Image 1 (cartoon, rainbow, N blue to C red):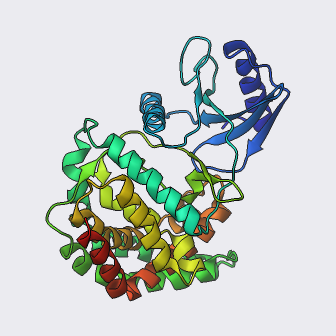
Image 2: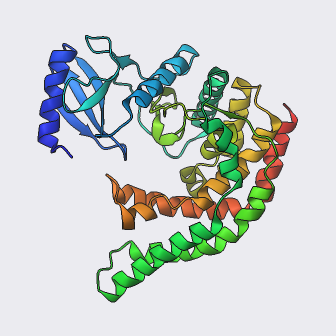
Amino acid sequence: MIPPTDLDQIVGTALATSYDLPTSSLTRVGVGQNTVNLRARSGDRQMFVKTYPTGTDLEAEREAIGLSELAGDHGVPVAHIIHNQAGQTIDTSTAVAFSVWGWMPGTVVTDLGDAECSQAGQALGKIHAAFVHLPQNAAADTALRSWRTIDVPALEATIDRLLDFINDRARTGEQDPFDAAAARTLAERRIMLTHLPALVEELPPTLTVQVLHGDYSPVNLLFTDDGRLTAVLDFSPPRPDLVAYDLGRMAFYPNTVTSSRHWLEAARTFIAAYLAANPGVTRADVRACGRIALIQLLRSLYGVKQHYFKPGIDQAALDDFWLLRHQAAGTLLGHQREIDRMLNDLAHHL
């Protein structure tokens, strides 16, 4: 990994030479687990600089930028990519590949109110409607199959490995403050996995697969203080997956489910706004989105795995996210009837 001072110098020089944007300051932006991001100032102009680690598939990232531009063409508020003087969206003139974006006003809001839920739902509906006819690659053939063929014994084995690792740390006196919470939640998750086969069996036979945003969540949305959506950020490369996944992941996002007594009403507001913007979605996709969200939460060990096997850039945030997601999984598991009634009611009006 390039040291921070060297990174700043490389990016600052490239902004001046490749973009004609001499910078007066570069400030690290504390977001992102996979990229190092910077806030750049050039005169009165502010920009967001996204640097890519060595080994990143830059062609796929260029395609992701193209998706952001396509969404913008269909009325979705997005950040605007700034091309370098050679007309490229990603600059590779130095040892650090990076893209430059217009700085967008607003902040991330993890606990969305009615206004934010409505605008977020409308934006996702526009994205899905805009992307529905995009060509799909071989991943489309395996997308639905991957949701139907979850290897529960492998998940149990991974949990057992993690628990053994935590127990070894206790025996050698290497515990950290996260260990007790991790051990408790992993033991609970192992029991919760018994529900996965039935949840998978209840999925409808046909669900829509298409190109999605890929990481549509509150951390990739910016809102002003009065609740106006200013930008949808960080589109993923075009890998087809279930529409129900994109819809359910945001409708039942862990922060919302764990922080509000009104999370079910928030999900209804979000999905209703989505349907108004994308009335072509199928009833099956709407009805399944709650199941898909729960299946994803149950089968994922994201955060706790990183803590013990390969720490992330901001591991403390991943630790907190694991705990939130685990709590959300328990809440959704205990409210399946209410979720189903709400989704069936919305789907009935399509």
